Image (cartoon, rainbow, N blue to C red; front, side, top):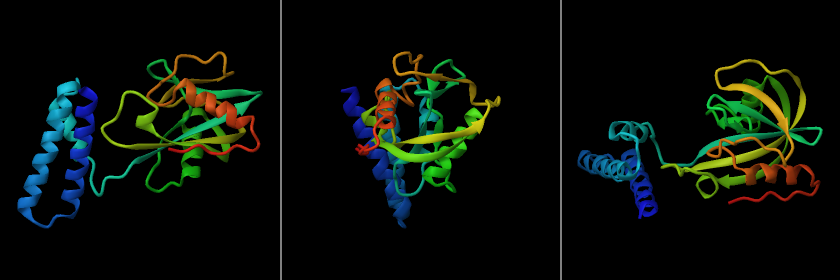
Length: 204
């Protein structure tokens, strides 16, 4: 039932957002705002997030509802993969939301440099995934995750506001992962792509 509530809430939010984007009728605008409120109320049943915060998250989304883009860089050295340690102690591939003025390749380079201090060159796309099909917790909006293998050029770790440290791991000794960003299966997929010159990109 909780899963179904989330599905309904996501759909209602999407319909309301699209309606608010295109309607020119003030009465319809009022109705779409009410639909958005119902979506927030449905989510609040199963979420610890207060209703005002949920409403703030939804109102921040404007325009026709489309998935957000998230890039994750898979950088290898001596058959080990680069991970960054988050402030909460978990580890992830360097990456983040694609900025409005960045391409997928540019964002992978930028995020890696910001979080690790390392310069890289994107080499190939590993996978394109619908986040809600692979990562928990589910989000109330869609995210398209793009995993990209990058070649290391140079650099050293630079302290920053996002990550504590960086390190290199083989696939059999992965640390505690930030699974909302990357799971063990996703990182293992990166290892498979790295060792396969004829890699065919899986996509959702």
